[in-house]
Image (tube, rainbow, N blue to C red; front, side):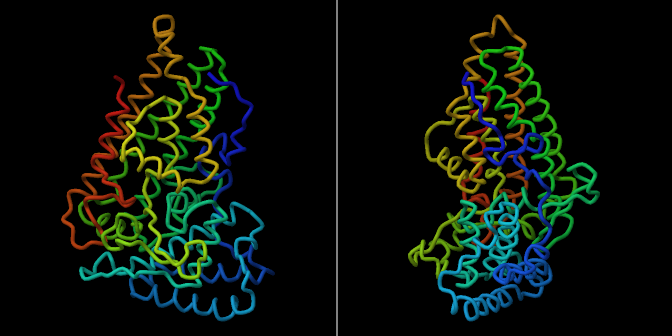
Length: 415
């Protein structure tokens, strides 16, 4: 196995929290906007984001977003054609992620307003120009698309009720909602706890690469991984406790997290007027989905799980475009260097316990994928589709989730 001096911090990954931010997410930009007039433009959208649950219920979200967009174009761009809001945050990732969080919620609220109840719903073909410029600039600075992705929906969307307490269910709450309520909170928060349980997996993966043939080191890290997987699975089992699959999730939570790729409500995608990089053509970006989490792809990489190279694997690889840049780079580095499967198989007779640990890691990953597949059927496929904006044949990421999840589950199973 490869030896490397690479550090997790090189990829923006925490040694204890894994893919969660190394500092708790910033709740708002009040203090950070003081004395900086340019940042105030983002702050104005933050205020809309704060009121989204009320604006969506009243059917007024689009109206307020359009008003701010027009005001921005009239008063800012007219005086500074080279205006770049991302530069005003001086490359501070925590500030950029905060801005990305509420801009993404606002953007999706604009597109999907009324989609949860209006059977004659028609999605707008574009977002307002001023808003499109801001959203693109922040997303581009982070190396991502201007769309709501898993980092904004989960990784950077929580706070601790007791700042000294654990990052765990019962002590975490959401910073941003669409409609709010128990089911929306409980759908997202288990993802945060799962990420925390997986916090040691990146470090364990890196230590396996560094093991340089040490069976003792590999055994130690595999024990850490399987323990993390067991905790992840226990948290995933808790999702139905407070997130209703029969009505609330499909009708009140899911409509707002769709994207505009493989979505029949926006077959051509979404226009981002004023964004020169897109050349006046509609863009097709996928919606938020747990497949954009880096945990399972990293486990695939370190455990040597191979997926058949077909169109379903392309969906899996495309999800990396929605991950933080450092996270996807780390996964790719592990893929290039990992030889764990060959290592444990070559020592199967000599060190059977090490091979058994490896098998348990694969088994737990398979169980995790199996439960995810079960939830997809219960929360999505079992419902009767009312309109094109909330399809049941594809996931929120625009993928044909049934064959996608089943195939990757089956490929995780030890042959």
